[in-house]
Image (cartoon, rainbow, N blue to C red; front, side, top):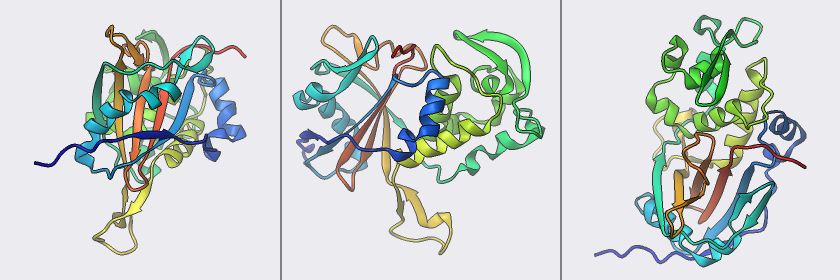
Length: 268
């Protein structure tokens, strides 16, 4: 019987994510109420990884004292390491198969009523859904199950990691200035996705010179980690759809990237 790997973890020096840290991205983060509310960290691990080990790896990660001593959690306007080891975790596999931004082409077609020919989003009467003001069809597509635009993406597409990033950007934080145009959301989604996932060549190529030669080499998990009192800390208050925590596992390089967003305002 094969034993589960005995993973141990080491924090890595802060990495410069050029597409995320650049001026344009940070400008939009500030405008959308995301700046100061997102944390990205990198760790390495010691044992080989296979996709079927993903749940075991996630559990070991959040129950590891070294991780607990370095994992940053939001407290007020600060990110601090609280030293909390998880007592239990809930893990959901997040599909991550999208290779290019053609995934979002349907949003750019004016016939689908998300944007006009000019690229400006189509407006609608304000509606409050889950505490978000839905004033255009873009947010209606994300939140309003009863509107026609919601049907543009099926449940499998909505589960994709790239859609989850896009949704996080569009909904923003508690102090969010919405964009009039769609393109900034797409451009920023592309930058973040490109930074966080690794594209690799397939071992057995199906068709020379096409995207079929490529695949995503990153395993993505959504995680809720809880302390010994059963209180969620990664993320805190996971009932809010904008409080989300991911683990991104690069098995080839034996690295884990954490992506955590906590909904709220931020004061410099």
